Length: 516
Image (cartoon, rainbow, N blue to C red; front, side, top):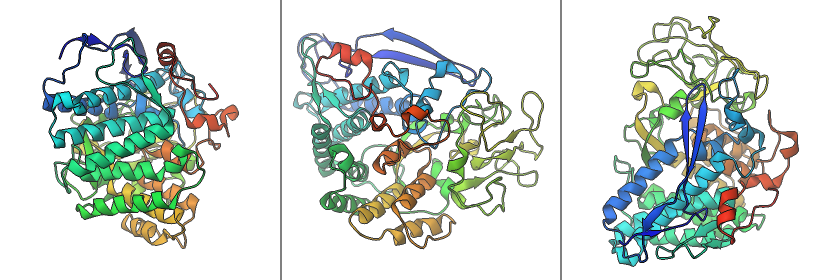
């Protein structure tokens, strides 16, 4: 390949936003850089397999992050917030503005996500180009990654800039509208499904397969009425969602008992696609500094927490979560002085509330020396101490404090997508929803309304990247919840993030989203 430079489109100019994130500080360093590819002519990538590996590695890093895409998908919802505790997690308000819905175009996460996933799209397009001579299977993998990256941009910002591999810096990339991007992504997925392997539950689900492409296709189609602005779901789209989920089941995937066993490196029937991303951020970003494991004696970072109203969606004692509190399996449990031991390191599963213990059953204290009791209620986004807020943990340090196995697509999600497609086609999703609830130790529902189905998705899929998209699809992303800015309540413009300011300056084909 001959060297050329690609100017930033918001597609390809990388401003590196490097985050040194700890429990006490988020230090942002910004440097402008040009994504350099080579001079005047594109002749194909030198090594397709290596390029694919690099793409998977890029996704690994992007999806293991606690900032950027994860924060935009989760901290912006009723599931997660990052309250400032004294001076800890202040970080110039970068976390608080997400939860309050007061972000602006210069927000660092907004810019980084735009660059990361547009870069993925371009690099995947280079692999797909006939001059790279990929095999049909390699092309299919690249089309899956391109579809996934373009879907994130479309879902997050509403439009997708697109540059061909041989277009130089003198050409402003075209901008695909939401409907154009939707059609492009759907075509990529249909092409990919034809040539991807039919991989069932195994250790091989860390790369693209027919099942992962069918999963993304189902998610795309389920949200089609949002992307197309039609207001209501099309029965044909819903039939295709059901067919895509059935194809996943035909590849051997299905529901599996043992909820927290699904978030380990062991092979299970539910994991359709995982990345080798470290799970450390999902484990430690909410745990207290004094909660430790043998391979992380430095403890947690004492940041991320959830709202009392989200915790209250689950069955069980509203004020505690110890064993025997009547909770469903997905809410997890907090070990007490009798159940805390080496098998759990004294650290619970799911929602951590109340007194916390170490692996010997000894009650823990916070740093000032008071009993470490996680409290249900928070005073606000600021003014918190070390104990305020219920913590959430799905991946557990007994399986490795920074194990490299993060689930991205899971069959329970597909199962609930099928139930929702049935409901949006006029059918009754109750049997499917209750099948899952009974498996998770929850009481069956007498009937399932639209709000019930949204709540069920929250209970099953919390902190799995989907809450923002779900809330938008159900018309609930702009509703009121604790600590949201009153001025943003009901503001439908917040369903999309702004296009980064630098992207608009560099590509005159981009137009800022309404409300920004």
